[in-house]
Amino acid sequence: MQHFGGFERPQIASPGATVTEPRESAQRGAREGARRRRGRSVEERSAGGVVVKDGEVLVVVPTRRAADGSRVLALPKGHLDGNETDEQAAAREVREEGGVEVELVDSLGDVRYHYRRDGRLVSKRVRFFLFRFRSGSTADHDHEIEDARWLPFEQAIRELTYPGEREMVQSALSKTGLGR
Image 1 (cartoon, one colour):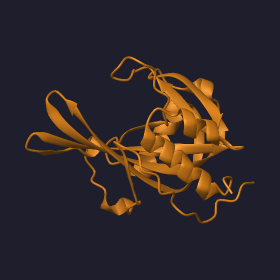
Image 2 (image 1 turned 90 degrees about the vertical axis):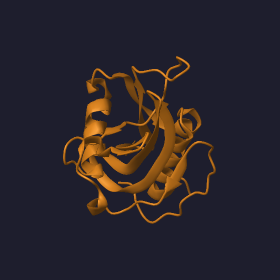
Image 3 (image 1 turned 45 degrees about the vertical axis):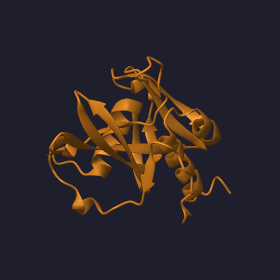
Image 4 (image 1 turned 180 degrees about the horizontal axis):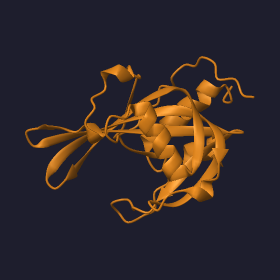
């Protein structure tokens, strides 16, 4: 069994993504996707997971491509449904996109970024959690995912498409004690 002790958050600067400290789930809103409209901008909230098993991390290739048409290698994540907490949404997304059941270990932090959709500025916050694999198969992913697979920590840190997600895996590596 792996030890999931204390950690120090790595100080990694990545353009386009900001990692912030976790907040209490009681502060979360209950509306689907937790969207708030402010003038011409929209705020979206999502949740995702870094799932660990035997020194590896679960990654997915969504069917949806990047803006330039290239494939994306990502962590499982998605919008909150109904009254879900961030933790519940993250576990559900891991189950749907990765095909596996997990056990919550700890919160990892937030990734924040902005993009435009239909002329509106969208401010996105994705709260990530560290999960331990319990059961299941990556072959059982849903239709939104082209492929789900396990990668060694270091390979995931190098190959994930988005800098903020690479930071989350680095944080998980530090938190699990495997990176020492």
